[in-house]
Image (spheres, protein in one colour):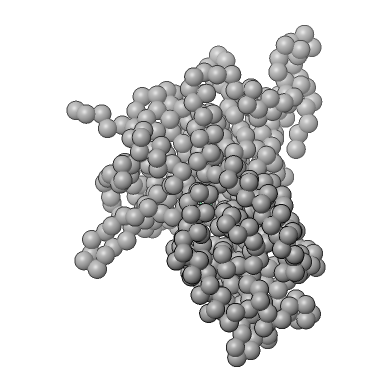
Length: 508
Ligand code: F6P
């Protein structure tokens, strides 16, 4: 019997393909828009890769199938799994907790049980799909228990995990009743990737507080049989398909569409743009407040400035998301009612998603891009805007320092979204910024998104996994002074010099 197991298996909550049912009732699958799929497609195809994930709807009962050279392995989720594992533990416990409790996290034991059970099903599917000595790359916070489940069943595998969202400071993380199980789950991986250096630091500090394992820089020494296994926990900032976006933005039809958008908005002198999932982490309310006050103060005029706010629907059955939608739409209605005229609306609010071509046209049309997240793992919209403006080097990016992208896009107009007065000044300055300064800032950001595109990101991560497989010493990838865990006794003096731990090392 032929062995159809794969040497590279990706595991993520959602599959890289979206299912639509045509008028004839036949389902078709098309690639989901997004950088991860674009980055991994070529390597998955050449490795005969498999992708394990959920099809996005309850009880699809699908068998594995082939799509564009990738083996797709669907995981079935029931209505109850969706309520407890996806909407519950993933998006009403972990999501708010990992985003610095902007909204209060809910802790329910039945949600946790469901999270464990669904993680087990994803792990089992990956175990069955992986050839001997394969590499398995697990994505994101919905599946943090999978690495350990894989290692226990298949010690031959090389295992990676990448966290797409922030990892919080220990003072926040420690609220989680299952905090130790999650850390142990993640430490089943050989390489754990984070968006920011600070996230990786928060993780290694949590390890030292909760487990008697020593860490040295980005290396965690995890007991394994008689010895210890090195786990690398390090920042690998994710990016976008920069060349693809640049090319898209240069297409004549996309440029024509950008001109049409400006025309349809009544040819305002300045267009500002916000593009977000409708999520409370994105700081949409803060942005609206700042813009509303600028209009009230007379520092912005409805005839001159229009804000286009794209808010794509997200997690609509979770209560905090429902409330947010109501608040945002009330605020938009008020601002439009208070400051609108027959010919001009201050805010053009769009509660739906758009294809990439339309997004690129919106980026081209926008004089100022507003990314005011209160907390965000990376924020790829900021990088897409920069890539789209590579041709004309115009446009101003106003970027929250609480988005991961702020570590790289240092010449954006960096803001603290909680400081409404500062945000108003920043928006006002962005609207008036001279052309030469816009070019200078954009040029530096373009360099960064060209150097670190999503292919570079995935290659760097997969290269770290290759080193693990070769048995390389990982210390060179993350050396720093050793730290001792909270529960770990100081090493005896004679041994301390030889060992890699420093008694009393700093903890967060
Ligand atoms: O990066 C965070 C994340 O949850 C991803 O895992 C996901 O692709 C995206 O946001 C959208 O969220 P959801 O899959 O819950 O619609």
